Image (cartoon, rainbow, N blue to C red):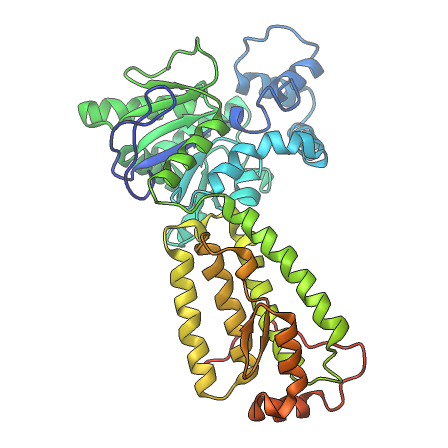
Length: 431
């Protein structure tokens, strides 16, 4: 698998090792131009506006004809209109972005190459787009990166569409920073072409030249295509007959079975935890207001910590980082250390928050823990609690529950108006 070892596909299952060198090269068939999205492609739209005619005209020549009759601005406007129409309908958007969401949830894909103009890798996988030579000053960024060899709709001037632009693109791929990076990735990785039939002249010439240079040293190449009649356009390449999204989803399952990733059910568990926590917070707010029971503010901090931990994992789903083996448990261990430091400093407010936050990755990373045993409440002197009754006794106990925490809470809530509750942001002091 990317970042470790991987199995090669025989039918729908990889069988041989790839030593962590798998690169996705993604075309429009895995995105907005998939036939299960709108049923017709951008190519079809442009050809229709030109009055129909031969559907065998190469893509850049058709785009050149459109620009000659109208303008380049009209061409890009038409694509943006198509993209935003898809995005405005969740039914279409889910289909267009299904592949990208699946890729995003696998953290081992650190670099991706695409000819697509859309912004789905940016929005769905958290990838940093590298479009022009100056962008490569940021190559060392730790975040996932997507090399957009035909430009990006977010940078209209970079879009490669017409024949003239394809010719310039070929020169850039041969000698420019973008081409150098793309060629390096393709020579050091097993390339999986997804939603891509290698019909772009500039890309095909560069890849064929690379393969000729490498000869027998070239790594394996694959094409993912749903048609049983599709033939790989590169000699020696293998075809994986399945859809783009399903290919990645099967790969995800294999990584889970190999113990490399936490199952996607982690996100269902996070949602269940969030619903339980919301109910618990409402119960405390209704029965133990802080302007009457000062120790309740520590319960607020604890529950804020747990809520922020859950939210962080849900928000990070598009990068998949929290799914790495033992990553959540290691994060929990780090918060455990921070909590001990806060307790030692008698910083009860932050200690309560950290204990709640620590529970989040611990509970998500240990799915064998039944959620009914998840402690959703907290009171100094009592600790994390599953019982609302015991929480109530502790908070009502005031000074007898925890002298130092109670005195601090009394000072903090002295002028607290009714109806106002404490909130702890996801920030911590340095100890």
